Image 1: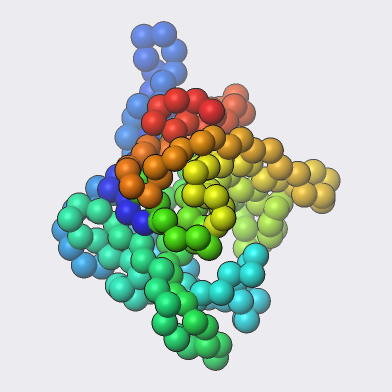
Image 2: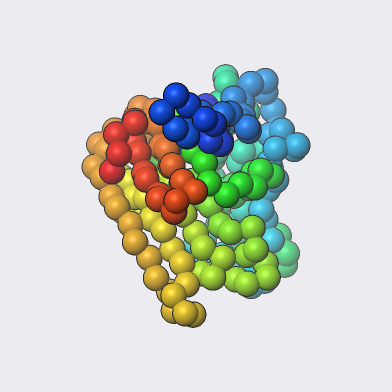
Amino acid sequence: AYIDDFEFYKSAQGPTGKVYNHLVWSDEFNGSGSLDASKWYHQTKLPDGVSWYNGEIQHYTNQDSNAYVSDGMLHLVARKESFTDQGVTKTHTSARLNSKFVFTYGRVEVRAKLLSGVGTWPAIWMLGANFDSVGWPTCGEIDIMEQKGWDKNKVLGTCHWSNNGNYAGYGLDTTVSNTSSSFHIYKLEWTEGGSIKFFVDNQQK
């Protein structure tokens, strides 16, 4: 997958009320080599000491071969290779990146081109910063863009939360037939009033 623009906006007062156009954090992925460590960190620790969730078969690594900057883009690469970490050997590697920016309410825009291979499951998503203390789904989750491994012609935007200890969720999907051959802008607007809107190429879904 390729990402050439990642931006967070907060609200500012416009002529007709609040608008989300005050840029507070971004990465244009200029330069080459490793990610900017002041903005990102690699999440590599196996959550249960054995594997990741949902039957994922890869190790997430901090190798530049899995995530690197070149040609004005972030390159995220899934590889078929034997890799041992934390005492566990797996047959594939990839990257799982967390930004070091925490926010509540605002606009997120990501311009990305996704993977084409069946079985890959790219996602641009957010977890509550209190995940370590309360767990999932109590921390909440907002998927700005998610693409299931078996359907490369659809993208999803989904909210997950806890309803008195029980899982609850709501999402939308839309057809985008060229996600792996063209860049698209995936956008989320989360307002102080509690509204959450998903967009693809500035079209609300």
